Length: 278
Image (cartoon, rainbow, N blue to C red):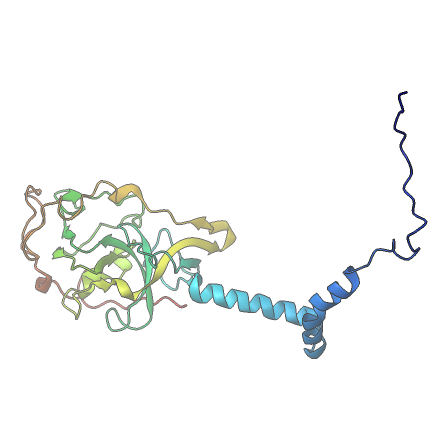
C-alpha cells in the first residue's frame, strides 16, 4: 500500500512566544559607532559642522604636504604657457619613487643659493650627462647633437637664446630654461655662479602638472614632443669637458663657449630673479 508523504505544518506550540522576537542590534550598535564622534561634536563649538571642516582641513594639509602643492605664478618667465597669476598644482610624488625628471618637464625647485631666494618654475632642457649647446645654424638649441624645435612653447618672437653656451650637465643635476627666454633668469644666467647654473635633482619640489586657475585657462601640462628624438648622452657621443663639440655635430653649432665664458643675463647685465610664491 502506497503511502504518500503529506507535508505537515511545524509544531510551534512548544516555543515560547517571546523566542521569535528578533533582537535589534541596530540601535545599540549605531550608538557605539557614533559615540566618540558624538562626544567630540558635543565638545567642539559648532558641533558636527566644525568637526567635518576640521577633518577636511587636515586632509587637505596632508595632501598639500605629501602629494600636491599649489603655487602661484608671479612673473612672465614661463609665458606663453604659464601667465602671471596662474595657479598650478605641483605633483610632489612625480620623482619620489625612482621617477626621473625628463626633458620638457616643467618643474618647481628651491633656488635658494643657486638662483636667488625662494622657489622657481622652469622647463627641463638637459638632464645628467646631456651636452647642451646654443646654437645651430638655424638658431636652435642642440641636445646631444640633435637640434630641438621649441617653437610650440616658446614665447612668440623669442629666440631660443641670445647667449651662446656649451655645457655638459653633471649627473644628478638639471639644465633649466624659461619659455619666455628674453624675460627669464635661468641656467644661462648662472653658468659662472656656484653650481654652474645647474639644479640638483634633490632641490626639486615636484613637477607642475595642472593649471587650475583661472578656470578659463585650466589645463593639464603635457610634456612636449620637441625632445622626443633627443638621444641619450651615450648615444649622442658626448665626451670631454664642456666646450668640445659632439661627434658628428653640426659644424655650424656654437663651439668653444665654455661654462666660464658666459656670465650675466642674456642681453647684458644681471636680470631680476623671478620667484614663485608658494
